[in-house]
Length: 121
Length: 335
Image 1 (tube, one colour):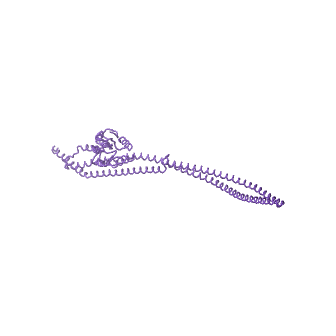
Image 2 (cartoon, each protein chain N blue to C red):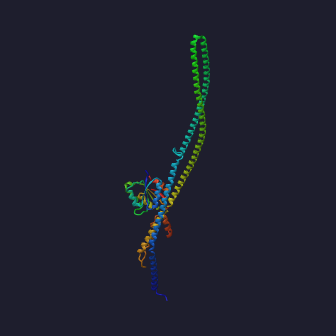
Image 3 (cartoon, chains in turn yellow, blue):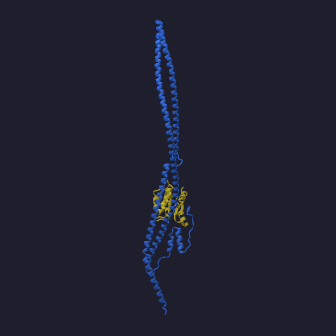
């Protein structure tokens, strides 16, 4: 049974690139276009990994992580924040919200898979 | 004569007011351009996104096709060294051929032995025929003896009648013996003839089979050699395909990284569009009379606060004449 990952990003391209990378590594992939969409999808799905952007319409990455951490089913799900933002203050905010790791875009597929390997239980 | 101070001040104020009116008209004239520029930028960003997504989709299909091709080829010719691969099939075919040839050679040797035994049988039959000649001679002797006995019985007269009967019986047995030996001789000659013909046929057949088998053996070996050669070529091709696949995968990984420029460009265009929209709103709200003051204070700060990338901050800082202020952190951090 393949592991399932949820990709939350408002960029079609990034969702496509991350999805492509994860599918090559054997993941089943779900996609959401923003934080709110991500929470809606998590309401019906249990996933092994979440990769989310920071800046998104409706609900940003920080709000999304806070929302999913409030749910028992996704309290301990590894969350990788994948964003163009690299400022320390934002990282601290992400960490405080419950992110497991931070990675700055553009990502290298091999490096992304290496980081995923480290954050997955 | 110099004009009074109040008059010069009034004239200056009037000139500035005229300049402000002209500036206001210029701004008003350009104001409709801002939403058009914003829309153009949004559309450009959308088109770039669609194009990149299309290319990304093509990559995915390319990789799928490459993988499917390698899988099919591998399935067709088998993994090198696998138990059910083409290597194993070829080795098994070659072994089966060798076993068959050994068996055919053994069958040929059996034929040779059979021919030898039939030749020996034929010789034995000739011996029997010669022995039958001895029997014939004995029978002839018995016939002569019977004839003499009958002559002697006639000379003896009435007392010799018993001898005559015995002589008659002896003659009869000798005749039967001759008849039997004739019959046996005829049968043995027939058998000897059949054996000779069989030896001849078996020998001819064996010679012909040896020739055909040798030719067939060479043909099959040549076919297997060609097959092995083609198979080796296919395996080399498969290895090259795998190498190309790995190279393709690496190239695509680089392309995946490169194509993310669209996301960064899209974000930056989004920030520019937001700034243009904000500028338009501010200008529309500002009084058109020359006495008003546009609310431009802090606009640059608001613009920079929307940035999400250090590249944007660097450009902004270079334009406004500030030093870039951001930390150089690792791209990855695991909390």
